[in-house]
Image (cartoon, rainbow over all chains, first blue to last red; front, side, top):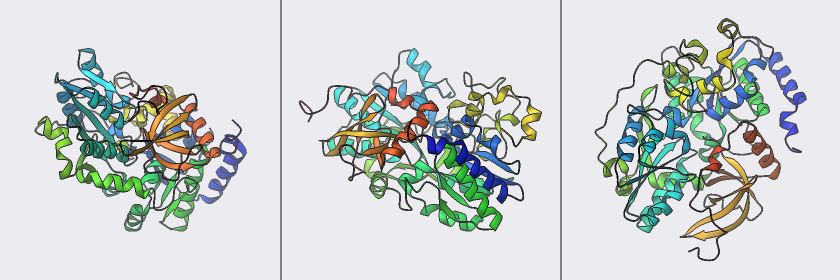
Amino acid sequence: MKYVDEYRDGGVAERILEEIRRTVTQPWVVMEVCGGQTHSIMRYGIDRLLPPEIELVHGPGCPVCVTSLEMIDKAHAIASRPEVIFCSFGDMLRVPGSHGDLLSLKARGADVRVVYAPLDCLRIARENPDREVVFFGIGFETTAPANALAVRQAKAEGVANFSMLVSHVLVPPAITAILQSAGNRVQAFLGPGHVCAVMGFSEYEPIAAAYGVPVVVTGFEPVDLLQGVLLAVRQLEAGRHEVENQYSRILGREGNPGARQLIFDVFEIADRNWRGVGRIPKSGYRLRWEYRDHDAERRFEVESIHTEEPAACISGQILKGIKKPVDCPEFGAACTPQSPLGATMVSAEGACAAYYAYGRHLEPRVQIARRTAAG
Amino acid sequence: MCLAIPGKVLDTFDRKGIRMGRVQFGGVVREACLQAVPEAEVGSFVLVHVGFALAVVDEEEAARTYALFEEMGQLAELDAPQPGDRPPPGDGEP
């Protein structure tokens, strides 16, 4: 653990906290965008360490959570076919669709497989020439280069029995939708570090300027998150709204141009439905026309499946930072990670699941609502 | 699941025109695509997300991030089976 200390060092954290306390003069609402950041904040109780003026709300950055019910139903329809080997990241298997989750489909005999990497599906396809191999291509920009490569390679090698069910989502349109939504409370964003490792952060600059919100690209360590909050609060208190990079040891403004080229060789921007939020214009990727032969939606004719989301759960408001998990009467009662009612409880990175994992459902609601400055 | 996990490049090889490598994460070795990190060499540390390296990092950063994700229980994806779970490439690999 010789390298860990500096970023876990209580002294460093305390110095940043002291600086935050010295800087803040009024209430601010800051949203961390990425589910990994939410998880880290809960794990280390960072929201409890901050002065009471600063409220952290939790953004839509969990790709498993925001994959639309309709897309899960399409996955279900495809995976039910006897000729199909349906491959997915493990996190997607227990997300409930209208007719149960993919794991229960597997239990009933469907060939559903967890893969580590999209490229692995090509090998499965080559080894099973008489079967149809379909990969569930979900994710934010971070995942897009790997998914793009698998499709590009399938076309280049002529692996005709491989196709992808694409459900890619993008961060900038999502935070724009949050800023435009009625009742928006978010005044600054902690930007998603690993998304920006691919995309860079120039695309956040027009958003910061147009809406007057600071965006601080931030890492995942407790000290990263505290530094991100400090940089955001400094901007807020000074009336500035710029894109700043807390995570400069990993990424620069340009991100990874090679990875981005791969994305745009294969994908193009499209509208997407977000679970709990609804349709956001130009908020995702779909396959370019040249790759249509590898588009599972076309191949299996599931384009006509349309599913309405049940309105039972407040996850849409949680994903927009309007409410928190503890504001929901079902949180930790009828809704648990074992039987999730909605988007933000379905994956470990969802805000509700993160709150639940660290016991926030066991605490008296009044105390949480008041929030205390001390941990 | 948008986290990229740091690991050490053990070797590099070409598979059907794609630059690949074996990358060690703690006690687990996985194949990863090195196409987007041309500067990565044997011994480099790379941030890998779903089998695709996104960035090169230094050893200190790699150790710190790996320890964090381990502590947060965020390394489960490394347990997923990989068709490449075989002896090192070289013989028989196209």
